[in-house]
Image (cartoon, rainbow, N blue to C red; front, side, top):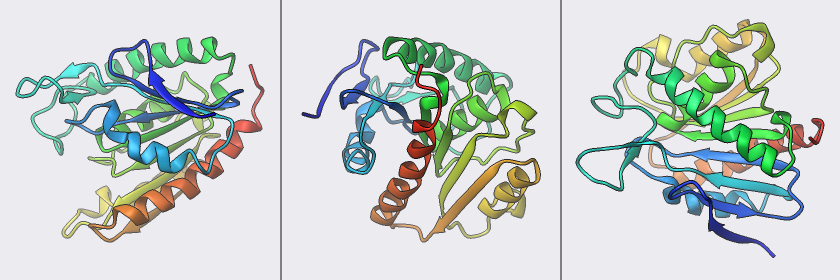
Length: 224
């Protein structure tokens, strides 16, 4: 039987399938909280068996509404991260993920990060810049802003799949194609899809396809 339950971390939502052979961590966007991504997880979990899902709340509470969270403070959702903010957010998340992996007896190679908006930026930084956690892959949906990444050699085995909505007037250096070319030039297995704005069902369907691929890669990693 499958069920959602409360994670010990405040506000986090968990989906478990026993016995878990992979961990998917869904990182919500700026101004949301973990429960916001539950409908997406419920759709995706049909495509990835034997997988443990968790959607933690980000640590920063936005001052205007107590239930709105962020992975780091910034002026608005599209602003660049303050200096050092990404690394602090990634380090705190890494600590939580390692503890979770130990609890369910999985190696970091069995981990897939699925980020939305600001959560996608944190996922990319955690796996490709900080690069202390050798996860299987990243699904980054609508990462804003798309960061420029200098990938260290140890992180070049991470698979990256990107989904982004088309935006008029986006500078070339911030485009999806530009980021994919940048990552591929550094030896990263990177692919992505550019969708028309206002197509959430297509984004969820495509996300399920990408996630199935990434979880299949995680299942090939050492178990614990």
